[in-house]
Image 1 (cartoon, rainbow, N blue to C red):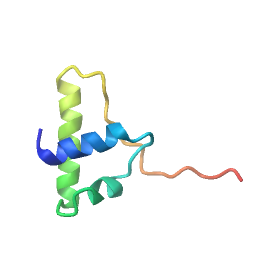
Image 2 (spheres, one colour):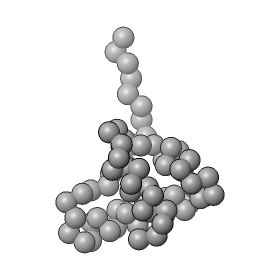
Image 3 (cartoon, rainbow, N blue to C red):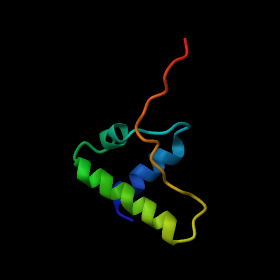
Image 4 (cartoon, rainbow, N blue to C red):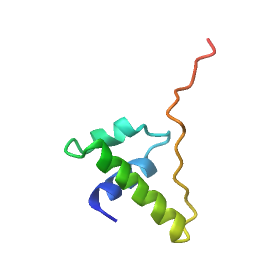
Length: 68
């Protein structure tokens, strides 16, 4: 797993909430959006193919709407 994927994995596991791609990308300002997506794809593939009990999913990028 590449260093960016490891960084994103740590951020995802340490967060109590879904983390938008923009926030993940801010962790490494030198990483392009394509590199961030590639690292996320690498994580997803690792979890899918290596018998992990973890599934990386996208929440669709929507924000909760307040009922107030």
